[in-house]
Length: 115
Image (cartoon, rainbow, N blue to C red):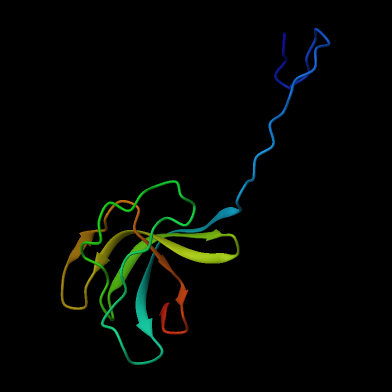
């Protein structure tokens, strides 16, 4: 019999399987960020897959172009900040749902960043 505190009352040993746990923290819920760039080249950035591996990217539809605004939840995963995007608004458009599993890094290759 096992109690809620994990003690085993019939004195048998329990085995605990060791797994690698990747660090993930939710930092901010539902905030807006704009896609900006620090140098010329490209016209936007394709969606990135979930860095935690919890969800799969459904499609690359409506990927953010330069100046797009995104809404989402900020997470930190293994020391990097990511936006789990729920909606995107292109510079001259309306808000549309982002594909399931769409993520955007806060900084990419000293080229794109979220602000």
